[in-house]
Image: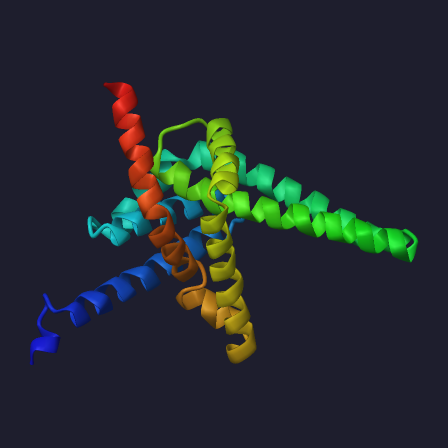
Length: 210
């Protein structure tokens, strides 16, 4: 049957689905030490962008090559993200010591800051995986892109929130979802949104180097 030919769209879809699930497992395993999660997310985005562009090679080899190459910058950024998240959480918890009206306002401000921080993070690891910049430049560029491309940012936030809401609502347990596609599915959907933007940025870098 045509559908089971190796070059059929169905078989290509199954191949990519298997690659994405295997990549999810690699990302999860390399994130278990926590401090290495930044490098794992960077490597995941590196491989996923190649999958989106149909230029992927050996998934495992590519993942660990990117993991090693970007480990220093990714880990530095990730530690900063963990520190910022810790401050937001501690601030949210300490709000219980304030009067009710002040506590609600304080929590709203912290929630907005948390959403903005997460929105910036959605750009950080894809940028770090694909463009050669320092950690500071990557964070700055991520913040600028988050603001300039607010429509894309909103779409990516909806993807992450929607997938996890669906997983909790219908599967009721988040662990099986994390094992299968919890990282890679939302990330690959976001890269489908970011890919045209990245191609434009690649063109700008080429023009500047001429």
